[in-house]
Image (cartoon, rainbow, N blue to C red; front, side):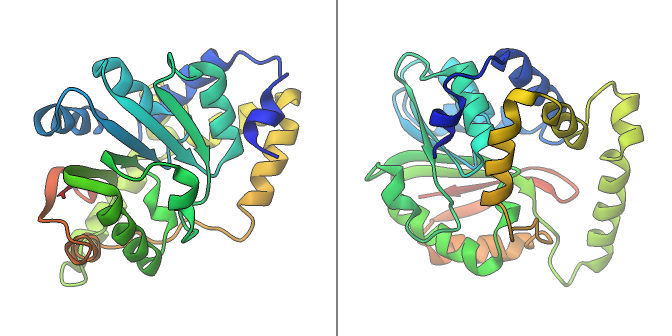
Length: 257
């Protein structure tokens, strides 16, 4: 059953939960404004974008608010996130479409329902994929994006093997920055605290159970190093690939089709 079917009759303040989600995500993903600036500089005013691993549509919402002639397809496997996004944002006047599919599935492009798009953006989502899955996904994106299209990935992209000290430093600093104490000092809820609070909503029980079923066997992997990302994007036919924002191993990677 889809998240849309499961959430249709739920009595929940979707907007409040989305605001709360977005507030805690700012502690993990402050780079989203950089991504939108790149889109503004590199694409025409009217474009079609994919929010890949969209969660409740944080990138999709920002794109559609900033670019009134854009259209976005938001893609995720998580039924809780899709339900939250649908409940709070709807279709944004027909410009936002939600797709429930697993991007680790080689058939995900069939579910997407778009032959080609102008942009693909993702934040803190692709770390669920192994190096081989990323390579396959990037080959898919090489076919999906039109010539001149852009791919932007904001995530924790580890340093390569020849920089072990850099990698250890990044992990230690990130552990301090993302600790419960650090978030509390900034007055920000952690992701774990957000999920615990949502789990206390009786109306969400069925959606959370479905989420558990879909993610059974999946786990967050150690970050694939940035050089592996770059090599895979090069092999997929992207002409230019590089980092446009970085704090230690947190980066925004831009690839131009």
